[in-house]
Image (tube, rainbow, N blue to C red; front, side, top):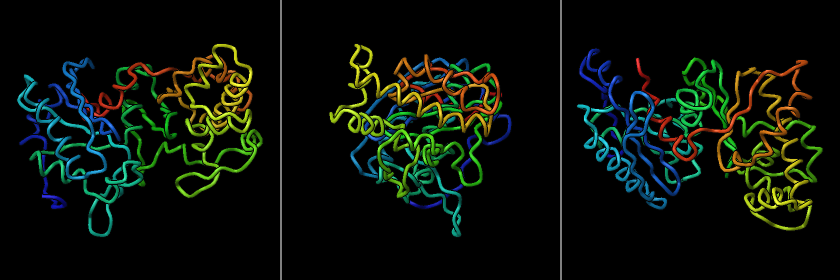
Length: 328
């Protein structure tokens, strides 16, 4: 029943819970257009994968579709019952005065204000864990991917939007407001403002958020201001690689903008590694140029923080969601 709160546990006792954590885990990435579910082995290998379309802006149908993917994966598993983690395009709010955790900050607007976790658990009959998709991304890379040997990891999403997440010792750090790592909505430093021609309005209502410069839309706007030509981010990157002067200048400026914004992260939390994700993480120039550019703005003589490409691509969200239930 939608909105009714029930208490569920993932197992009847400690032994069963510990057993669950040693078994296969299910992770689901709830995206705006696709729902992807994986059955993840204890070694981090995908044993099964299911992908279905997300019902367009229909909340109850979306809940049912997520649960159907989970049910199918449970049947495919040899384990008695798998733990379930779900990555979403927003976050659960801290409990309000009525004890409710509602979805917030979702670009899939039909989820906002809904008790998604409660409704899924009522449908399934057992506990799940729900996290922001950027957090799931960085958790997947910290547990099994590019940052597996690192202690402190900052994961960055550079795509339609700009987000981030923090993992310390393989554990997510989310904070009391559940917004830790939401670097996309920090204000750009003044040195980056100098690199754009005018202030930019963010969908969140603020002005000059990092997202307005570093997202795909931000890169597109920067190229339009420079060249007068409106191109998608992927087209700009491709033209730059093929030698187009204007596109190359746009990418060079983007590298400088990214370096200056990331240097603030390094000064604040000094991570061992920063892993880039999202569609713009495929731009090879970022890894060639950004680290040395960052070194000019970080408060140290020789920056040791590494910048890495993601290992899992589109599967990172579902893998990270499965990792919300850690192995003992």
